[in-house]
Length: 492
Figure 1 (cartoon, rainbow, N blue to C red):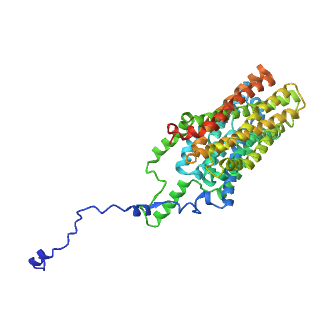
Figure 2: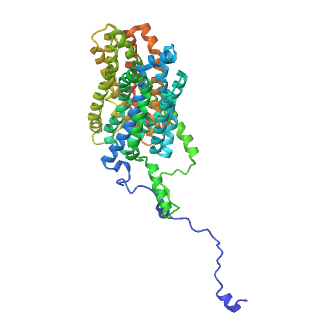
Figure 3: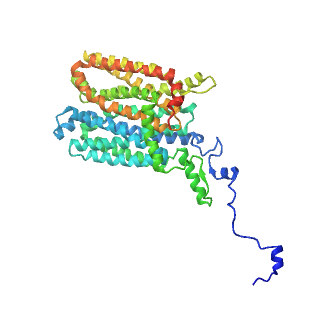
């Protein structure tokens, strides 16, 4: 029995400790306090605010990885005859496929690499794919027949597509639009310079050490670069960095925090949505489809030349021992185009903006002179080779082709990351898919085309197709803003 009198209990009852109402919801201020975001636009933890030394060292690591994978794509080209002889293969199409199948891996890899990078971040993907790239190259070196070599070449291209797919996203993470042109030029150079250097090195390696050493050399080079990347590379994906920041706060006793970029959806749903985004951008966005067709034709033309140049200079000019050096014409043209684009692209954008909005379409004017040099180079290369004019003259043609290629590819790549900054990896993946299909399939038609038309008319045909594709540049420049801003083509 209680010691208090009953009358006192009626006048002053004991407090009721049973909850009768839910606690009031947190105020807007309390909710905002639990959201992890950047400390304003100048937050030093944001990749765009990192010191230039950190941004550029990270970019150079990505660019080096980007150099290695296209380098691997064409390194085998001069050794195809050696591979076929050793493995008892006589079908030339199968020989060409052993080179171009790599690019089919490029076509399929971006479809899952891009969404994974937007869910789990850039860094884990770079590291995992680099390790797998080393493993698949070891398998190529140990191949005992053509089907085994072709299968592992495909897998090598599949994982080797990572830096090509995720690289533009890393550039977008670290560089603001006004400084992105130079950064994209530094990243784009390896995409085309790698395929040009690959045959030059591969010709000497396969002749001196055998074709298998092409792959052992790649294993050694990639292993060395991977060790450097473990120390140099940093995560740059802003949503992933915010998640890491949120986890640190969880460890310090604040379990209610969540990232400002958190969409509160399961990873399976996010992956499914991200997986379809590159295909939607490719087939439902006219501007992405048009520019992807342009780069597909250009890339296919480049690889068609890579798979036929060795035979041409051996048969028409008798250059055998140093035939790998003829590929440097493409490389020198690309370096020249790279320096020109890096020097003037950002300046042109700022001048066209006149202090106003820097529209992505301002990246496209450089494509006009760049695109025009490709058919000119093809005509010079084809007709001078057919009539066996001094060997240096067709090399001038390859220089112009390389120059035009780098101008076109860099302009398209920079335009896509400027136009779709939130989903730069997906936009690049969409472009890479179609471009790689062109690079894989067009070379298969090369030998028969040159047999029927010879070098002169064969390359004239390629020049005509390249010239026709320049219409895409005009459409993109004139109607690009309207197409990408239209609600009809808004993709998420």
